[in-house]
Image 1: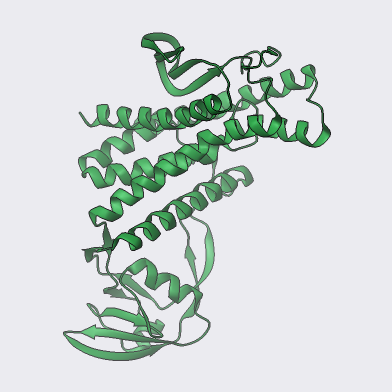
Image 2: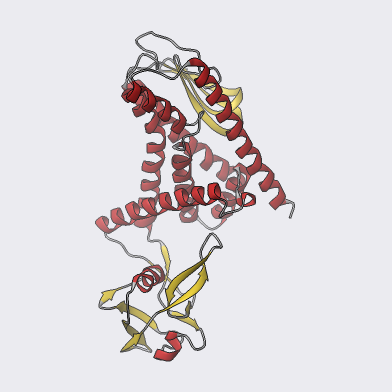
Length: 350
């Protein structure tokens, strides 16, 4: 059952991405021939609004086939008024951006639903204290709950960590110790640690670990909107940074995952409840939005690059250049997908 849920989630994310392209194309007066979830042979579908809506056999993505636009044959054009080619570069860029934009909007609403449901967050309760650390020298104790830092109220471990990291000198902690309020001054120390990409970094820390206590975050309506916007922005930054790390080699290629990993992790999330599914779906939705903006021919970002070139130079790339770059883009894209699947099966086989 969990695997069916994960496939449904992935298909829904692809559907919203393609729906963004579809809606923008229709708004610009472009005839949409096919709306497909999946690639390859059509296994089910219907015709509606003069478009062939279908589900295809290979669930590795989807596409919207517009009149006069074909990724497999970039030289194919149509000068009809309802074709993609007849539109201005700005109109085409609008159509191309609408897909990733739909993913970001969907992620925002998923985070909004999570915020309204009261997400579980890690409480700023002290667990393990590192020996000879600033926290130990200042007299912090296990189970101390940190209420504020330099007068700024905190409710989550994450917020506390950020304030300590960004501090410039000594910090004053207001703590709850067995129901009694106390104030402790700590001087964070620059120390080596590992970030989420397993890189060694320097960071201001006080030498404490979380006690593992969590609580439900109670948010008002406007706080929930702020929460959804902040989570969407943070997820976007995370994906952009991850791509950068992969390109520069800071993150090894073996860490790249494919559709099998996505389905597997979503299936595990479904076992933990709807909020976990929504959270991971939002992250994958942002992932789809960011990756489709990469300037790789055959992706939205590659097409945007071609249209920006036409907008600046006042003429489209030559047919030869267009075909060569598109073929190169497909080779790169299929190579990355193959690497992701290879890594997925390696992890499954241990």
